[in-house]
Length: 251
Image (cartoon, rainbow, N blue to C red; front, top):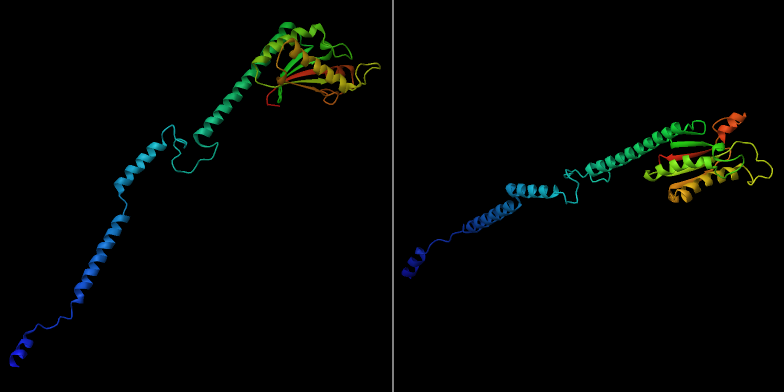
């Protein structure tokens, strides 16, 4: 019995702090886990800069779908940026070209009027609507009629030679005074006469000069658009006219 007691006394005492080792291991593992998570979430600045430069280079290429120098400002509104500016420049250039054509036409018509001494029968002016060429009715027609006189052919032929180079609509407009037509007239009223006279000039350009009919507009205004009061023979003469207007706009 004495021997057994002695062996029992020599046994090592029980260690109640072993749990600290397990706890320390757990804390270490958690620390390693959070370090790994942090490392995964941290941006590689050098790699990011390389990627950024590569994307920027691609967007600046001419075949990209984004406007040049647009960056990432979000300004992709149609009509703005370089593409919009270029479109506006093209439009302005077209307008300048058209305006030059109109002014060249005006100079050529005025020169022809002076050379042929037609100042009393034909006039040309720059108006807000376009270049207006006004022809006296007696220069074109007999009284109360709408058949063109042979004397009118040279000026109409000259105009027809200038029209094909124009990118404009041409409005032919007939006008009369306010006096009723004589009994037995071919036309019911001044509306019919002004319309027939406008059509006679139009048909010359289409049938005789072979110009495209889609480039012309024909209108009869009767006495609704006088240029002078219908109170004297001289003023009524001014109102009886055909105007050929090369329009500045599209209509």
